[in-house]
Image (cartoon, rainbow, N blue to C red; front, side, top):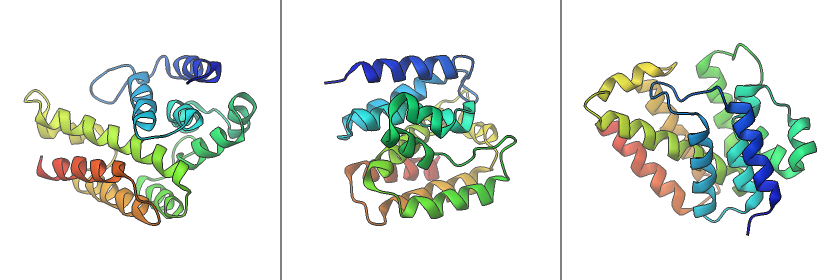
Amino acid sequence: MLTHAFDRAAQFAIDKHRAQVRKGSGAPYVTHLFSVAALVGEHGGDEEQMIAGLLHDSIEDQGVTEAELEAAFGARVARIVAACTDARETPKPPWRPRKEAYLAALVGEPAEVKLVSACDKLHNARSIARDLADPAVGPAVWSRFTAPREESLWYYREVLRALSQGYSHVVLSELAAAIAELERG
């Protein structure tokens, strides 16, 4: 059962990301946040992990602080969100070193973080795969991102490798399948 904390987190996410849209598709960004939270819940995550799924981009994209998250949603949620964040400053540091630092940290994260990160990457990979299969988008989907196709694929493969170290969960096989679909596309 979800408590009112989830309701507050949902409203917080909506308020913070209200004006943000998904790259290329123009879909409201909150669709991604709710999808990640749903995947976390469907894969056995608890309410705090689902809340972290809703808020996982709030530090990186909206300038929310870890202290603000802790005050509103508790230390565990704040810790998971912080661990899912690869940039805290604006402008963001260069792409490759930022991703390499995130990957190095991800290896040692606990299962509660790895589940949220895996669900985030799974939803992103599935979204890209859907756009790759859309004749109106196709391979042009890669132009939406900072890194070109090969670098993006490298990152997804390395995320899967990092998540797989010391962690075993069905979500990883789903992520592997989504990555394989991206590699074929």
